[in-house]
Amino acid sequence: MRARGTAPARVHVVTLGCSKNTVDSENLVTQLKAGNIPVTHGTAGKGARIWVVNTCGFVEQAKQESIDTILSCIDAKESGHIDKLYVTGCLSHRYRDQLEVEMPQVDAFFGTMELPRLLKTLGADYRHELLGERLISTPRHTAFMKIAEGCNRPCAFCAIPLMRGRHVSRPIEDLVHEARNLSQKGVKELVLIAQDLTYYGLDLYGSRRLSDLLVALSQITGIQWIRLQYAYPSQFPTNILPLMRDLPTICRYLDMPLQHASDHVLRQMRRGITAARTESLLDEIRRQVPGIHLRTTLISGFPGESDIDHTTLMKFVAQQRFDRLGVFTYSHEENTAAYNLTDDVPAELKEERMEEIMAQQQEISQELNQQKIEQVLPVLMERCESGFWVGRTEFDSPEVDNEVLVDADACGDLQAGTFLQVRITGAEAFDLYGVPADSPGL
Image 1 (tube, rainbow, N blue to C red):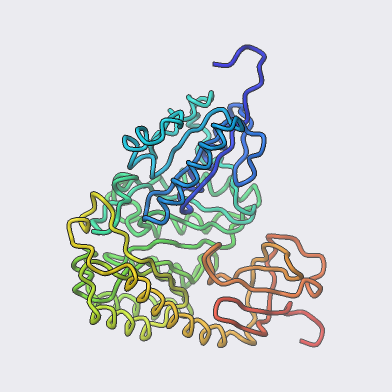
Image 2: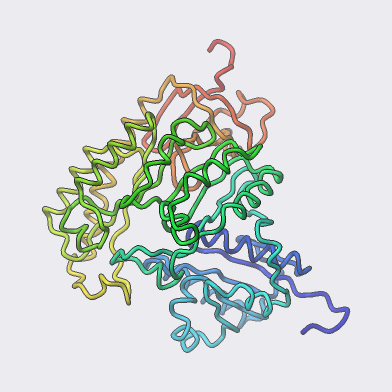
């Protein structure tokens, strides 16, 4: 407890990992500001005497980044640059007992569900009425919105249920309230996130209600794009497809991590779907939503993945020609079902297979982008740098997908968050180039 009349020390929040962590940190910052605690969020924390590190514990590389960041903060504490260090998030939730022993310099560790306790430690009260009042740290025109927490899926490789618990949907009315507030603050794009969007509503309403949520959000004035990330292929709710086709606010974009295309590997992964059913679903999505752009994520080097399995995956990628694709090498995570399997694919071979898939995808992306030349697309302009205005189409999610570069001199007096009609004039594997569609001579 601070002495009467003493100003509270400034808190700095560092966020690592995925967009779900970003939302958690934004909620923490919102609560602290409401409690009159000075707080900053991001990379520039100079002068802050209290640091909070929101960690990721998903795969080995992310865990190492979190550990390195904590160790750096410990050095800052021991050199007198900061007074208190607190650690929260997935790594802290999953490995708290071990971390408390190995990092006694950290003042306290908190799990993913312990925001009220963390706030109390920082000198603020948790205010339930602030739900939906979140202060975003992303560019003001775009906001991530977490529609559910946790996951009920049994994927053998995934530690998310260990760190985030079972799936818990947020009520539609709460999400609409939050979206309206975000719109009033200038947000034009909502990126809906959850570990599994397609499960939304089952726990709360007894049925999948993602379609109802999309209809409600699409009616909010000011929201022009609604983007869906992290859809699970098994038991996919196809009733959202006509909405994606017919509602102009819903982007023709879907992020659906498929992980693999070999039936043998899919069984080992406990994905609950076959390659044939996956292909049928992709065909149905493309049939019902012409022009949709699909993003997927794959895993290379899962235990038992043979050369034949890898070749099957390569053929699948070549056949499906995904618009966006990422690959992770398999990470052997404690307490997951896959941890009981032998991690028998050497690290070098995992990397080699990953690079082979990405090289193939680069060629596909180059070819697909070339087809966009001479098209006129609405682009959400986000920033000006190095003589270009940089933005995204409805087919591109922030931070992970393609960008469109437009000569700044041709854009006139433009502001971030503006939608600009752009004629595509050039294409690379992961970038497009264009000019304003109303430029003279076009």
